[in-house]
Amino acid sequence: MVSDFMKQFPAFSASLGDSNVRALVAATSKVELPAYRKLIRDRMPVDSIYFLMSGEVSVSVEEGGNQIPLGNIGPGQWLGEISVLSGEMLASSTVTTVTPVTLLRLKHQAFEDLLGRNEVLAKSFLSQLIGIMSDRLRVSLNAGSVAVTAADVEAPPKRVGLLWALFGGSGG
Image 1 (cartoon, one colour):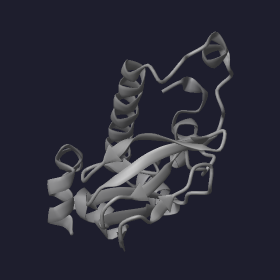
Image 2 (spheres, rainbow, N blue to C red; image 1 turned 120 degrees about the vertical axis):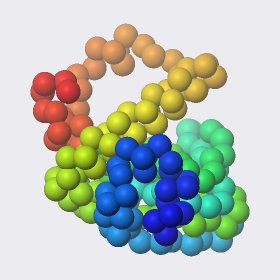
Image 3 (cartoon, rainbow, N blue to C red; image 1 turned 120 degrees about the horizontal axis):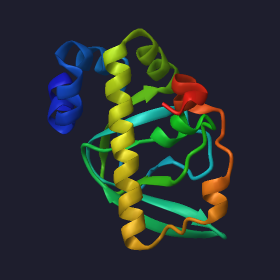
């Protein structure tokens, strides 16, 4: 599974190095799901980050009782990372398998343990997560689907989650 991970996540793997990739993969469990299965449900508890190794999933959000599709993603993508970063442990979207999928599941506690023990893993994870969030925000803004208001900018930051735990009030 280590070589498969390195193929699907080449930049992340390169930043980690072989021994850290092995440690990360050893902390995961393999999950295989058939098509049309809900992996994550919007606003429901999530206890893991998933690395999509094969297959395709659709991502949507629920608003006013309606499912709003956001798109499909394939191998080499992460799922469930918002829940660990926010500290709320709640899904920000619904993820449904479109095809049979293979994922590596990293429980939040294992994630925190890895970060606490290994500075290279912590820096690499944080760098990757920041890149993922930035890319998703750019795509959303370019699609015109995100309206940022003054209240959004002026709202006090939540003091929970991984980023707060790592950086506290220093802002990073």
